[in-house]
Image (tube, rainbow, N blue to C red; front, side):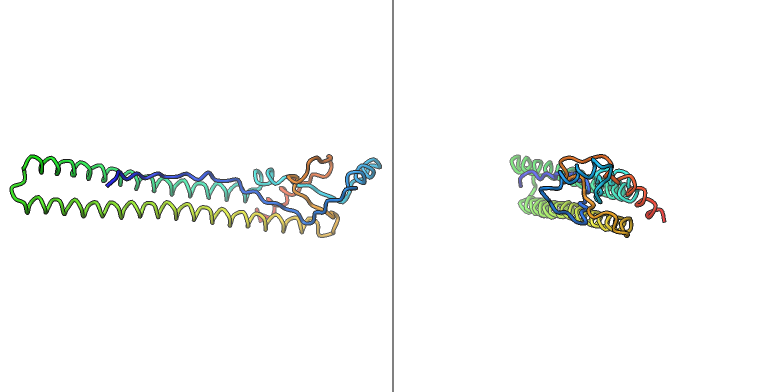
Length: 207
């Protein structure tokens, strides 16, 4: 049997990024129109939010992300403990195999039946170790899958929460467009409502 190795993979908790666009249309004349309106001291009915900033300061996002990461790290510690115990058991098995081979070569067994009995024991132990190796691999895959599913659920929860907040904030229809600044190449001061959104989100979460 080839040496069995257990590699515990760490999944880097990816940042939860949500795109909040209530309506978005690219118009070739938008920039000139915007400049004309701003030149008169007015702003277009457009708002911009910085989703990275929301994720950093929205209490629900911060607490949920920290909790999810802590759960994942705890699971990885348990998996690593199991993997180390398996490795120690396998090394003991390897030494038993070496000792068996030395005894066979030296003719140390008192009978053929005794040698066959020891060989059968080692073969059974090998099968048990292979089963444990597969169990560890299955556990690793399950933990990774669970983490990704929980992360996807958190992403959806944050999207729903922010979109609901934006709908309430814009109940009067003041803004015709609310954009994620990730889609913008440039923006003019006065359109960013990120701080107001974060304040509203945290107020809703506190309640």
